[in-house]
Length: 154
Image 1 (cartoon, one colour):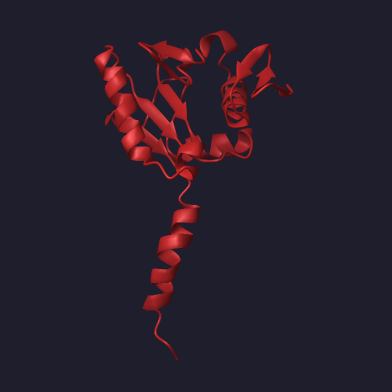
Image 2 (tube, helix red, strand yellow):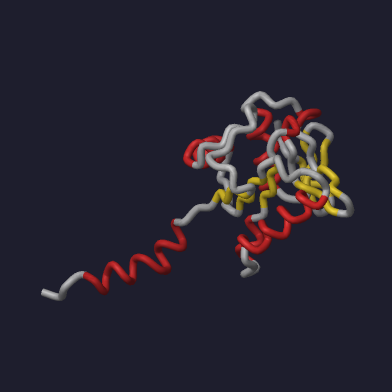
């Protein structure tokens, strides 16, 4: 399954994706056994779209670019949650991911780490929003300097 670049996006299985990261998400959903027709890619909610609504059990927005632009991923998640709630989807969880996935095994690992099962519609809690993040960069930026400060000089 090869992604072919077309215009400002990619085509896989005769489906158009706006980014290669979306292609990775599509490949992951297909890998775990969700048929393309049941992924509900670019699912319309009013005037907005949600990236994926696999098996109509869990909404999934994947936007690693939000982090790169300096936008607040938590604020974005709350805005998307409000849109879903307004349109009668308050009972369905929303996953917001901003990790730059390397490949399908990387997505598998991240979803396992966060206890997310798209096939069963299971998420770790009922807060309404689950954030899938890679905290490595944040640790390097914030925690390593604090750790270094806490080690006594010899």
